Image (tube, rainbow, N blue to C red; front, side, top):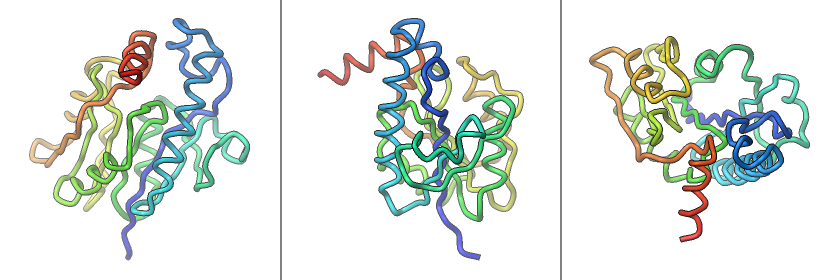
Length: 201
């Protein structure tokens, strides 16, 4: 069976008042929507253009799968399903076709193809790979998925400084784990301010 590299971008339908709600407390719901919509388009177009992997959009809500006008790239889409972010990412890991899977968010503007390439290369001789975020979470999670698909997203304290530590703890002690560079997940006004300051340098 041929193996493909699968990149999955977790994406919410870009609708005002339903995306980046923590950021909206600082810049308003329209500003947060505009940031998310722009970042989703930029990141997904950038990554989907690379033919070294198959790019998927895992979308929420499930009813948005068929709404072509919402999505900036023409690539295969699947629904995230119900549950917390861990349950939804676990479902994606379980249902993808044969080959390693790398999952990223749609709200990290600094993701480039070189990061995804590094993740898949790491999975050549590691069981898992993570891209740490500077808040204790992570912007990328990838699994080789052979010989089994480990269930790494259970009992994780999401949206906390413990998310990466908790996820790593779900892997066997002898598992080989690689780490990429740290990037910023823009969740609130402090993150947004740092990102804007860095972008203007």
